[in-house]
Image 1 (tube, protein in one colour):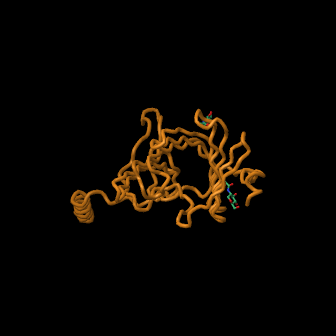
Image 2 (image 1 turned 60 degrees about the vertical axis):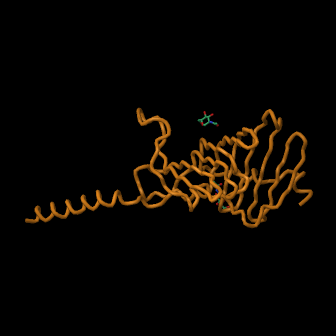
Image 3 (image 1 turned 45 degrees about the horizontal axis):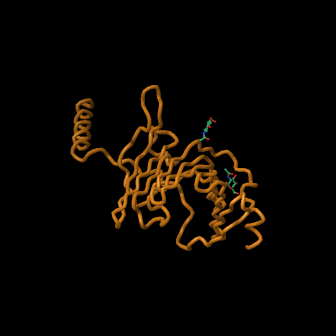
Amino acid sequence: MVCKLFAVVLAVVVCAGVAFGQPPLPQRCFESPSAWSGHFHRIDYSSGHLTHGYMFYNRTEFRLLYIHEPTVDVPQYENHWLFYNTRKSYRYYDKDDTCSIEDIPSDELIPRFGAPSESEYVHRDRLGAYTYNLGVTTDYFRMRTETGGTYRGFYAPEFETVATDFMCVPVIESYENIDTIPTHQRNMHWTYMNITTFPIPSAVWDLPAACRERE
Ligand SMILES: *[C@@H]1O[C@H](CO)[C@@H](O)[C@H](O)[C@H]1NC(C)=O
Ligand SMILES: *[C@@H]1O[C@H](CO)[C@@H](O)[C@H](O)[C@H]1NC(C)=O
């Protein structure tokens, strides 16, 4: 009797599952760990520039630093600090020893390196291969903007099998013809590599004299 009842309950559950599709996965990947560092490749299709380098991020301290390695276009290191607590951005060119300082617009929040809250979860995607475990499983998010742009983000959860694991790191983000959020991401493709949450040496946040003098 109990078995029979269980079978009926199971059948109802299964039928409901078929009728209404899979229950939606709880949303996750809306933010990265609060502090990390890693390599990035950035392709700006609007300007035709590829840059790569290292980045440091600490949301607790409201700080972000991109170290762009020299390229054909800019044959010197460019350090770009973004201090969201003082709302100042510093771009320092090591060979010229020059610094350009700008205000961070008041509506630009520190990036959370997660899927934008307006984006929709599409499905899981394996980047690379399942075979021999040569790859990484990601949650794929997509967003269309009012201007017809598309955002696509692939985020790797810390434990791919646990739906309630909200900690994800960005793997790929691409922005196509996006005029809105954020304005500088019009046609950009980002790839993140070798992310680590190892403590960041505090010296990376020290500004060179050329940036400090004009503060
Ligand atoms: C990523 O880490 C591996 C292992 O430490 C290293 O060999 C490789 O050069 C790193 N890649 C980049 C782009 O730094
Ligand atoms: C980020 O900043 C907090 C507060 O200063 C600090 O405790 C933490 O160690 C930093 N994280 C990393 C990865 O450096």
